[in-house]
Length: 229
Image (tube, rainbow, N blue to C red; front, side, top):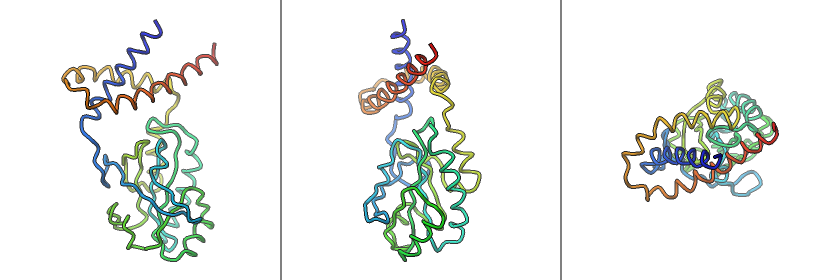
């Protein structure tokens, strides 16, 4: 009986995936777009890819050590990072920050990192406004940031002050079981939409991805249940 219930839930979750992935996500800098890859060195000279943080909720933060507004905003980002880095979200496991500096002087950059206590990934090509990533993300001024979900899709932009924490709060997972109940209700309502789609083969990749996510979620729920038995 339990296996049948799990299979039914799996079908409902997969159904919703079909609907959401009816069109491929395009790469771009607008909300709903897949964030373009960034590949830059950190202060140690090691290349760090933005995509290396996939699976987490990520704040892509464009800033600079010479930028007064950026430096005034940094304490807010530090506090948010410390408060949310270990939380689970409905759109990712944990919260992280990927800082891209538009500095041109390495010392200015490194001093700002140390003084502002920026402990997350920091990268820069030290090309100032000539960095190709300025154009790639259409950055017109700093600070500028993009909030990405676990798949690297942009879900919000330019979250400053309390707006960052308030936005993250919307996605905090209270516990896996509560989230499962919420999703099941949503997917049940969308099951009728699924019936209008005849061609499911092109969604095979998305199906396999959601199956893995579901297996992990179900195992977490089983673990929680065993602790209370």
